[in-house]
Length: 281
Image 1 (cartoon, rainbow, N blue to C red):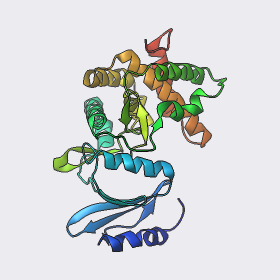
Image 2 (cartoon, rainbow, N blue to C red):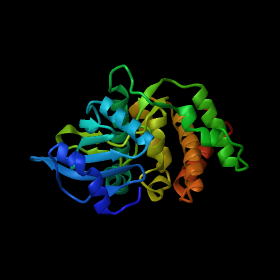
Image 3 (cartoon, helix red, strand yellow):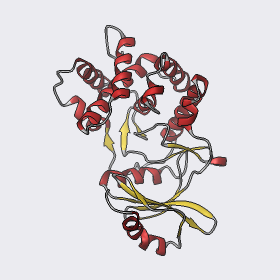
Image 4 (spheres, rainbow, N blue to C red):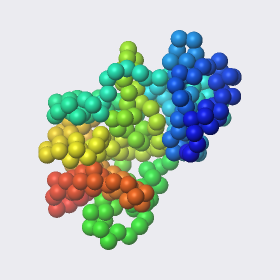
């Protein structure tokens, strides 16, 4: 979303006044939201206004978790949410970059965060959830001359046809979306409104926090072992999700003119480790 800090500040002003908030930093925007750190008394919070339907639906997922494994939504109104601010000093990306032991610990934390979210919330589920089959349409509903993407497509179709469960997913579980909540532990932010196989939520961990970490020698093999130990998922299925997600991420990145190095690299290595077949079973 374009605009200046002053524009973003003005866009949030009605909610700051309504909820008795004062700015605690400059307002800023992402492609899907306008945000500002604020205070209410001594509370350090975030004010967030969604500017897309998908982001609003993701906010509904965040509220549905009721602070279990995720930041709390304190009040909401018409796509605007007042959020708990997780401001602890620990950072999962920095931990992952500190070396193999730190990277393994960051992977364990992300796995546990995902499992906690999958168990959170109570029926009925929030409205507007997108099935994984639709989320993968840019990979699975097109023909690909690229052999890597064609294999990723086949693998994704097999995974989507044979799910091992159906949960409300985070949908974008990576090192920047799980924050240090101090005494409350590690807390997720910015979910996508997705549901489907829980294995999907581990895939993005393998492409993050950056290409240098994701493509380091032996990293994929080591991370897959950590994920299998934490989740009970078979290593072959984890590799299949890595191939499928890497393919989809590469399609998106290349369509937007972005860098698909990590996504393609992880998908290529996962395919090599899978050997002759690229099916989970």
